[in-house]
Image (cartoon, rainbow, N blue to C red):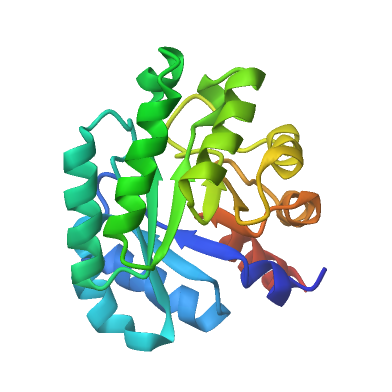
Amino acid sequence: MERKEILSHVDHTQLAQDAGWESIQDLCEEAMAYQTASVCIPPSYVKRAKEYVGERMAVCTVIGFPNGYSTTEVKVFEAGQAIEDGADEIDMVINLGWVKDGRYDLVEEEIQRVKAACGGKLLKVIIETCLLNREEKIRMCQVVTAAGADYIKTSTGFSVAGATFEDVELFAGHVGGNVKIKAAGGISSLDDAERFLRLGAQRLGSSRVIRLVKEEEGGS
């Protein structure tokens, strides 16, 4: 797979707690130079980043991040504010406690409400696979499908583990036709990035892929 093809699926990400404008600006420049799918940045920088990149790059941000236990009302407000600030895509974290309680009805309703707040923009739903068992992952594939979200996403990158090949394969076998897959967290090589795409992921959340491409270019 051509490197350009891999890069076109990457949400180039900077979500470190201490990320300042200089690092966000650098991220945007790299994303535009390498033609990634989007930049994924903290909500507080969405307005400034969108003013900076304009229509040259999609801006993605995170909602209820990274723990997911904000109230639904807070997530809806966050999503609406992000869209107003210029976000093109929203990645929200589910309430994992509700999953453990078996309250899939509440999870589905929350996703629907956040999707409505997105005003037609893309919504990706982070289910934090490393904290769920197989049955819970399958149920979440069904819930995300029923709720009308655009993507199911493996991980925040802030928990105990990130994306695995097994989870992407599991998603591919259980999501509906309206739902795409985003693998995120711990993608450590270009070979792994390519394998995730071949297994069915349409997006890759990563802060490393561009660096890996640069290293490969430097060594060629």
